[in-house]
Image (cartoon, rainbow, N blue to C red; front, side, top):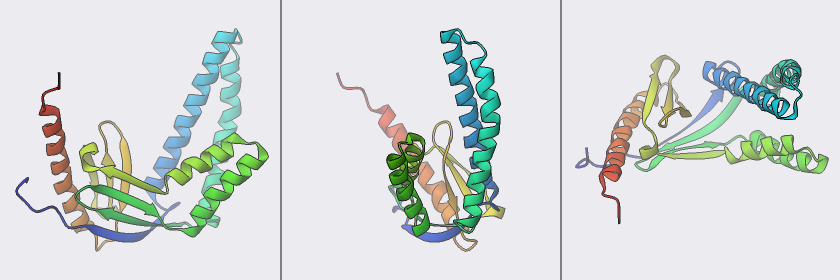
Amino acid sequence: MNNQQPPPELRWEHNVALLTNRFILFDLFKIMGITYVLIVVLFSLLGLLSGEMELGWQMAQVFAVVVPAVTLGLMFIMLVFYVNRMPIRYTLNSKGVTSEILGKRSRWANRTGIVLGLLSGNPTVAGASLLAKSRETTFYRWRDLHKAAYYPAAHTITLFNGWRSVARLHCTPEHYPEVASTVRECLLTGAADRDKTNSKPARA
């Protein structure tokens, strides 16, 4: 593998479906579920420390309504504001994989959310918008990616680091075979780079 030429750069754009995409819905429900659990655990610990043992249960009841409402709101935004599509550009080369959100609506919404959150004194809105803005462009080195799950029927590839999924490549039917082959090759190169780094003796 080390004697071979680096793979050619691949670049493609794809209008990724949102509400009709099982991967997007899975990520949405997973994030909202984790958020709910973290909130309940946090308030339970606060209640334990303050002697208000019922605080965790009260917050669990409140956010059992709030979290689904926020989820439905996000789904409504996906459908109406984004028209169920998100244009994304993907770039694969010997260094890593980059994804860039191209939709002007998404960029406008993130920046507007930051301003509105700051003006209204609402750190939640501003924080969420800042987080979304930071995710407009993401880059992962192959050496930091450990494996991939391939879904040929859906033309999708999920990339994992050492313990969780970190990115998804949504391909067109025409691009998927070449992208899948390149990902397999680059993951092997990344694994070799990790092994080489780990085998170096520590400096005194």
